[in-house]
Length: 117
Image 1 (tube, helix red, strand yellow):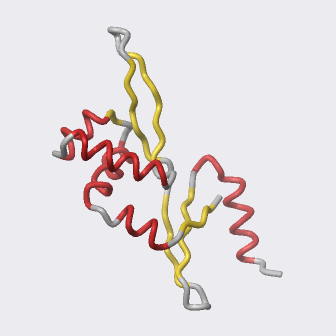
Image 2 (cartoon, rainbow, N blue to C red):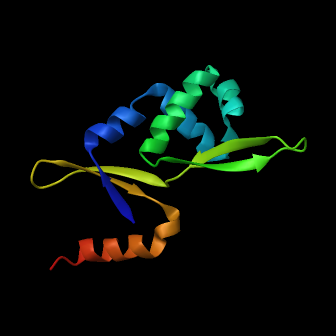
């Protein structure tokens, strides 16, 4: 399924170098904020601020894990497969965010786009 976002919102979010580094890291495998800070060479507050922004745009999701010592912590993972920015006939940009778990919806949308009424 594709979700429409304003071009400004998406570009502002993914235009930030730190946010892109975090997205790249979690696209490989889910990571905790501490792991992201170490891998991306960012401060922990910077990681949390970027994650908050990415979550606002539904680009990141989290899961809570329990460590062996009983402490809880979150790991973050990418919440999309691809983003497509296209220029429409009206001269306006359109942003589509595709998510794997919605494959039947994605197929339906693709079919609709290929067979306009």
